[in-house]
Length: 474
Image 1 (cartoon, rainbow, N blue to C red):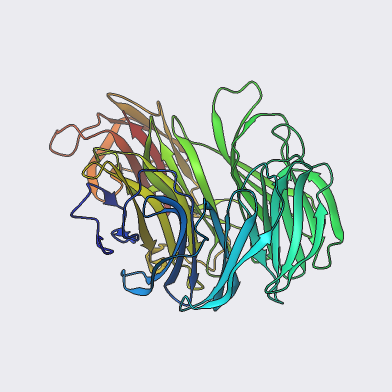
Image 2: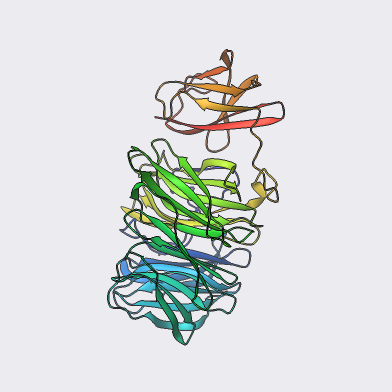
């Protein structure tokens, strides 16, 4: 068995400042890149990982370790000795986690304390004999009860479970399809997002007793495609956020979208669509920052296959504080596919993420973990305002580009020069104006050497303001 270790000697990969080298977090690689997995953090950096395809078998594994790879609770099988998979998890309180998986159609669970010790043994949670989408999404309340959403033939079920006792409440969400759902509990509010029609995401709110407080609300209309995955959270004001990926009718490209819902009224307050030119998106995560005034976004981005783990920070109004960038860049790796990203945060605002990484030496995939030190954030997290980009912005002539790209400065002032950064944060080129408010970059570094394909940040500063744009070189 291969113990947890730093990956830098195994894979070609660059990471942005503030992000750690990844470590391997399983004893044996898997043939499958699509290992369903989940991670939770207790304390500062005690990581609870649950995943499928344990030791190349369709079983469920569990492990507790620190961010430096120190093992707290060794890798062990928690499922029964039958086909098992589709793992998820949630915090029960600050010192314990609940782990969920499917064994065929029925769902099972166990609850573990911060050291990995068993609080509730492996037990049947949901006995339903037919499910549409196998994953159980869950969140806990202040009483330690587990609130879950899952999909059966009649639609989306919302159910409440008492650990060690069983199901105490169930409702079928009105008008729901037997398709995607997600859930988040905040105080006495239970937020559920689901599909109410073809590519029609909707929101409903319950109280802790199972009463509908806010009836179904359609979040976004006129969609042509909706990717069957979501991530949800709440901000410091208790307002609900959902992060997903879709395309609109008649528009040839897809976008990442953030939707903010007023938790008092159900009104949709923000719809922020983020176009990623020629970049797809998958495995979206939205996570609370250390004070709830900021939110972290994390997802996989790719061209023909998965190349990048992307990251961004927004304020509670949906404005970018940190524009999207590649936290981990695998574009130079021989096998570039990465998959199944899941992430969690601690109270300090550090981010811990796990994903599957290909390895040509074994013709398989390892689960790896990388983490972000919140102290690297270059803005005050307590600020609710975005970085002020006035009085100018940067706009690229083509994105992606193949040979050269022109950056136009639009605004009342023009910086004297622009700087080009690779995704390790290193300045690779400084460019001066070619004509008035335009800057030409030929895709080369400061010595005239052509730079490799990938994403680059171009930044300029003037009059106390900073503007940045990301371009992709083919």
